[in-house]
Every structure is written in C-alpha cells, then in structure tokens.
Amino acid sequence: MTGVAHSVFDGDRSNARNHKGTLYKRGQMLRQWKARWFVLDAERNRLTYYNSEEDTSLQGHIDLGEVRANLLKNPPPGAPKESRTYFELETTKRTYYLSAAQPKDAKEWVERFNALNV
Image 1 (cartoon, rainbow, N blue to C red):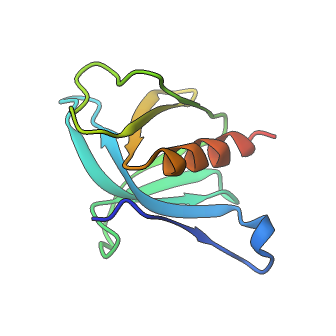
Image 2: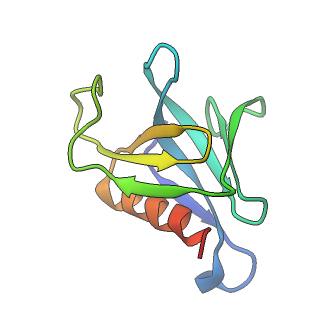
C-alpha cells in the first residue's frame, strides 16, 4: 500500500469534497495499527475503509455527522516506532486514532474532516 492520498473531483478542482488514500488505523479492541484504504464521502458525511485500494469488501465506516480532527504532537500510546504523523478523529461515539506516512497527507485529511462541520 502506498501512502498517497487522492481527491475525487466533480467538476471544479477547488470544490473537491471527497478524498481517498491509505491511512493507518488503530483498532478499538486489540489496538493494533493496520493500513487501510479510506474513502471520504463528504456528501453523506461518511468515511469508509477497506483492506486495500483494490478491495471491494467494506471493512467498516465512520459516521461523520459531528466530527473534529486534530493533529497530535506526540504519538498515541502503543503507536509504532515508524516515523508517521498521527491525528485523532473525534465523533460523538468514539475517538479514532489514525496516521499518515507524510505530514502533508495527515494535515490534508484533518483539514477535510474539519471542513465538514463548517
């Protein structure tokens, strides 16, 4: 899996509301970090994720009705020692811990999540 993020554009490039790419997600129960292919559907306020970009079997989704994303200065407890940029995604039901391979990718995801509640 690559750490590249992609935007899905419907017409004007400046109005891109959807986004997709590989992020690492910490599991809720075992707290293991796994690479997942994420797809942000801003129109439905939903983030879906799959095992890989080629996978068609949905692994899960996150309702983004009320969401706040924050870049983390320090890795969360139990995070891998690899150099990644970590952020948290707070919803009304749960706080998700995610990471991106590149700081610019993490920043772009955080900006897109926070733009949903504007």
